[in-house]
Image (tube, rainbow, N blue to C red; front, side, top):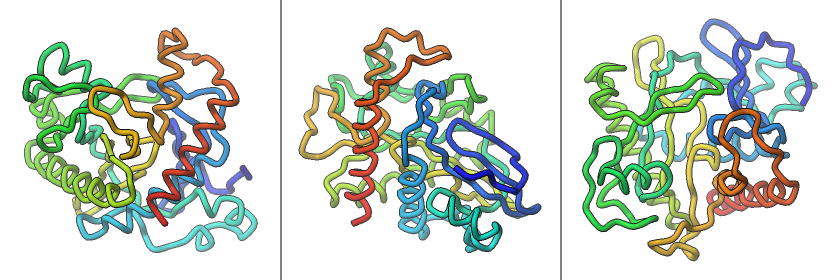
Length: 286
């Protein structure tokens, strides 16, 4: 990817941020992949472009629920043409927001760390669930299960709603919970019409200069969500997914201790992951 002449202000697990001015920044989705909060050595070719297209679709699809980080500007408004041509499919001009200091996770089905919590305690993040649920069981209703926001290289930690209130305040916590569940519900209903179950997802929120809660970063991508094909869904088993869970499953089976550095991912696993990402894009947006 071509060097960008703007000043880089942040490099995250997947995205790089560049300063435009006091109110705007350029967000570039790279081909890096993070699994278990460790950035893998091997990029996923084209992933940044696919994720950006999926996110942009959802930002527009869900715009009636809450404001988002779009400014209305394009990369051609803020970059020289040659640079803009290089990043136009993986970069967006967005508002500079104050991030809300939690990960806003919504779960509609039981799997992953939620399933582990449930098997041990009958709860997820302190929320009691009915007895007798299995892997991939649909929950009675979507639940908000926040986690702490980790620094790059650290692990996010599931927290209770009460801890969420302590971190960001009761009023903001209530709004974040309500908006996150509304976004998930609308997206899950739409995705079902395209043959996709959204098992769970993570939203990022920020506050604008007027204190308005705003949806930001990425939305309902294979990096922030688990997508299952309806045709492969069976309660009691872990359905194959469209997302980085494919690589996570390989890493789980590799015996890796989930500390950096991660093992090198085989080329065929990377290729299959790219194919799954692209399939999700095609199904959702066509």
